[in-house]
Image (cartoon, rainbow, N blue to C red; front, top):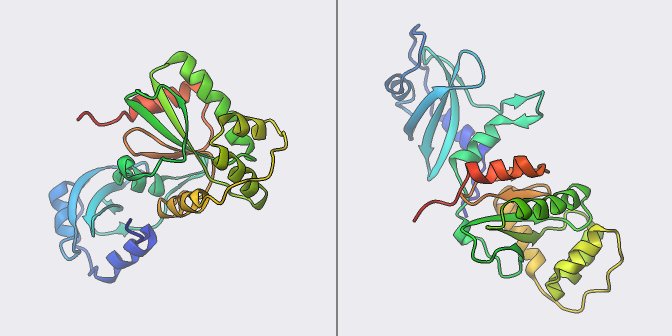
Length: 248
């Protein structure tokens, strides 16, 4: 997987950027964005108003990734840093980057995932979880609630211990491929020592690092979009409905 970070791509962009053309239109068109960014080695894919008044979101394809940039209406000024929504405490730029670069779900190894739901379901959600994470425990309950409302779903649970105390517990669960033991861990019950030498957890951690997943719970939706954090059941079902698997 490409390991070039969003920050590094931004710095690369800025390194070759000359003074942008000056103008004073009230709307930034795709043609104007192409002209403003003509000396950048990338393809302007789309232009749309951003959440920030006066700035436009410009999607640029570069080195196999789609990068979100911000330009003013005149194409004179570019903003390449992270935009933070303080009320929601969300990094909007990082969210956009993930939306523009969905994960290839078919490339994610799921041999050690714990299945929950309909194994024949079209809509499949990968859930990264930690057996000692309180929000993961709450989300796990929500998964059952979601299946009651829509039985045609499959949640594939990937253990990702984020703290030292979780490592041994997760290893035990992996050795036995036991949903029951995961739920016992969520309930605060002690588990036996692991009795195998599986490398699955290390592979899960390497996978999470390559996907820039830094916390649990984290969802990979059927279309490859990544969303972090707990969701109540109706929000979760809406999220799945809005991000379905591509139709073959």
